[in-house]
Length: 243
Length: 243
Image 1 (cartoon, rainbow over the protein chains, first blue to last red):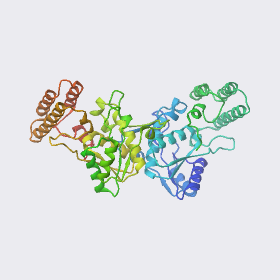
Image 2: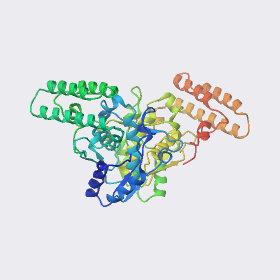
Image 3: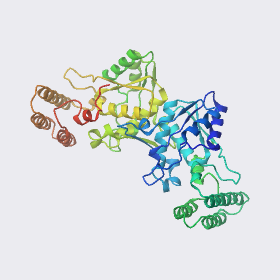
Image 4: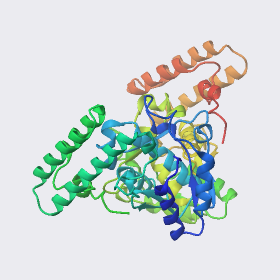
């Protein structure tokens, strides 16, 4: 969706390793925003994005407007069950439908051999892979590792929304999750690790972030088995195969 | 869906006129049947279908089974609004979703330049065209004229369900519709033609066909303006452009 950072450029680098020419799209997709969300204020910097992409070896930039992607009379929706259930969908029920339809369109437009998506949005990667496989879109969906800042926080265009204080909190949350992962790997019982991490996450988050807090409680309650970056329910159903 | 007749072979002939090689699929698609419908008894004659297609100059026959099209874990649905609203959807709300997903898959699998669909299923043709355009599937959707028997009745695999008496009724229904079309073309007021045709259709249909009867009443009530094979609401919204 643009407002590019090193995470996006790592996707371009991965695509270059796998093919002769790389095409990038920059499109702030309205169908994946709910009415109350930040479509109008989502960070936009198209000229700088174009420079960054050219510098990274991208051959073509496709930056359509909404009317080009969703012309008058547009009437098709794509819904993916399976990997889209729970997690993000609990808070943004519209989200993966919007992602699925725009990615189906972009893949069909470009007819590329491979398409690279960041593992930062891991559930999205699983949804896109499921959709492409189910609709027999002849493009291989490749996942690329998350790029993080020096404090371990994943790079994200929306990090631009954070004040210095909020950025410090975000980095603490990331540290808590990593520590929980280490403790689980070291053999501590899942329930103990989970309870401690949930408490620490809620403690660390500013009281202002009430939505996030309820989210943390619910997500923590949902997870079953040892902590892992891939939810147990996905692994069980075979959705967690890394790309 | 197989059980081929001259109508299907006319699609192959149209495809041959437009391209060097023709691929046909024969697949009785479970996602476009409701639980109470005729999935289990739909006419199947694959060996004869293969012979007919080869004789008509078809290069490849793709006849998958349901597990190949919808493997374990399949989770994607495609919904088309616009041209799918009303008519068939009033009676078979599941139908066009099943058509849209299987046609999206077949088009993506084959990556053909053109795909030919019969105008007999005119609403389906409009839905497929809308879906292919919306998802940017790079295949041109072409409509081919309906093939009819000597009495004017459209050929259909499901005509095999009709007894001799029922076939006679079906042909009468067709005659009534044609006559109404002629009267409307000749300038009779739409409301008069419509009322007369609705009465004659209900009269002609056997009292056993209660679902069909209520269908006729509703469809007749829905149509606005002069009778035409393309409903006025489609023409108004630009869906009725012939393929």
